[in-house]
Image (tube, rainbow, N blue to C red; front, side, top):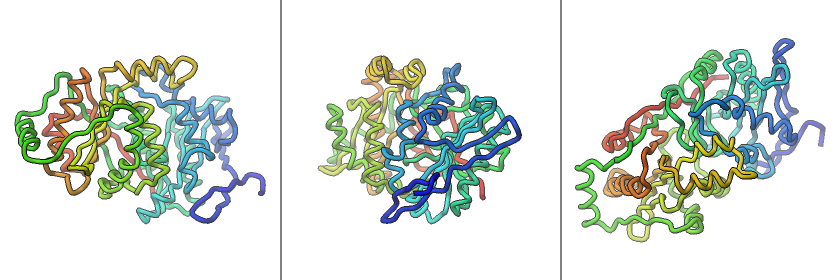
Length: 400
């Protein structure tokens, strides 16, 4: 195989990737595509946000191992059907900005749009560095015949989308994006415009289901065969992952950014879920022997992740493990109902479980994450529950 090329497996054939791209901006600032086979390059890409947010008490760090896995073309399921590149802007030996750019062929085939997705955009308050990595991402996309740059949107559908544009004073929930308030300006300065927004809110300590809903719950339990199933351990939860794939594909086909997940992506999402899940906080609504929907609430371990700087070893797993058992901050970012149960009794029962779950966990706060601004029904349900909206994340686009 010629030097500078590698093979990416797609459906039934192989595609040669072009050589890595390198761009220069003057004598000081340069942007380059990193070599994901080079450990030093990968570390520089993974470590940059930990340096950028080292003094922030609002950022929710990822696990470093999870990001490294996403750059590993041999291990991550994304590369079985798609391709990606990762860019750094550097000056004087120090990283100034980074970005990933993705050609998700499964997403593009489903939507019928030749889009490049960008993800993991982070930058100093440096317009030149931000422009350098985003222009490099755009050039990579155009070389593949892609006509729009869209994001932030990640490798798998469960990755948190968007850039924070409102609510910079609030702590990020587990797994949610936090960024400094200059990020929107950097993105808009290079021609990116709003595509769609997500809203996030919270329920405060002592939350109780509104009386009107509580009365409905009693009637639902008396008059229907709906019931709530919980999990005793992670082994039971793991067995639910194939069902979660089915529910996701049947529940969210109308949602912006949707594409069907396959078994590999479901396993990857499940692997991430099992890292942070307390099975006793996860609920499934059953209609007889059929699953109607699910509600996932997680203990928020962001503070432990900040303290360990996203490392499990050598002792980070102890601190994070303790937080997974004791944290009283919660994050609710997994709710799904099959279409035939949406807007019916199952919805009421599902929301009733929020109160029960938060009370049992002695929660002081629960984030309700990522409701699409166009999902009027979901927003109305959340308003009826008493959600206080306090954050907005934005997905941007730029025509190429």
